[in-house]
Length: 409
Image 1 (cartoon, rainbow, N blue to C red):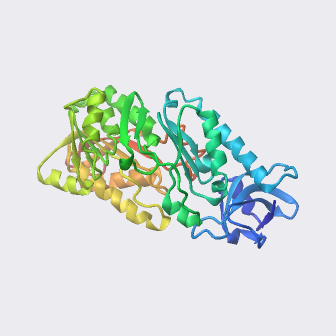
Image 2 (cartoon, rainbow, N blue to C red):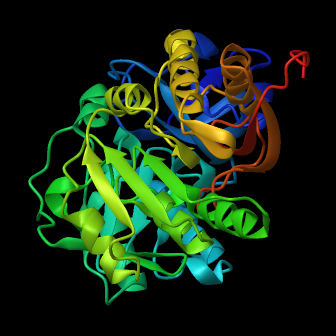
Image 3 (cartoon, rainbow, N blue to C red):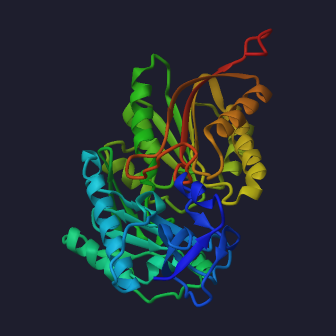
């Protein structure tokens, strides 16, 4: 296995979980490394610290991804060592999820670098397991990873569900694989969903907000407020709105630009809430403008948009997008209402999100009270709020009209 030598002090940043390394981080790099080759990473010659894999031809992003701290290696071939590490870490990731009793019918089995498998995402559903491979060092072991999953989940069919953009960035080929052509069967928090394969976004379903949906429902049940009309923005499968209905909201409007006009009514009926909701296919911002002009009001609104930015350089635009959303929502709220502000945008912190809501409230003459916050569920592990694996934010507000003369609240 080839050895790369780090520049001084770089290893300290890796110990702080910075697993993405670039050419500038190394003082010595072998010239003959091939994409996806697993390598040893050392402070200096003879002092090996980490093991990872390299892709000299990546279009943008990390040159080397660190997998784990170095352990003494046998004289085995590089591919054998890499496979053993993948087998160990994948098996451990599956085992670690077994502690979450309510997740066993569906969950994220592998969450990339959080499970020491950077570039690998695996989601389990009732009738399928999807594998997404985004990096060359993992892609070399496609067949082996699938076999490990088939051995652990013999009753569930395993499929590849790769992202074209990620693979192009890594210079990876597009494999011809068996396609998933059924409806995806999903269970979460006592609800059941069915999603045709042609309507799937990303890798299927967003399990990451599972705990926050549950928390929101319980919190609403604890409140003594008149909450009749709900609004689920960017609704996708309608999971937030269904939790609102089970919490006691009488009627929910579901809005998404996707074509879910058959799925939302079916989910309402199959989960015992027939005739208590309606679906509107529309751009969310366009819908909000129309609802404002029509004088509509809602007692509870959930705003859980897709990521507004994936790059640090666009964060200011993303923050402006959030504030634009919050301001429009606040114009639709009744004098004492609830608002769920959620974000899956990397590089935006809880403080950043809360600031956009606060600034929107000042401009719209509202006062805020935070009554609940949340992060991603245990199947999307992270070790600190600063880690790259932490990306999900949920804040539940009571929003009230500002009393005149009390503008600094």
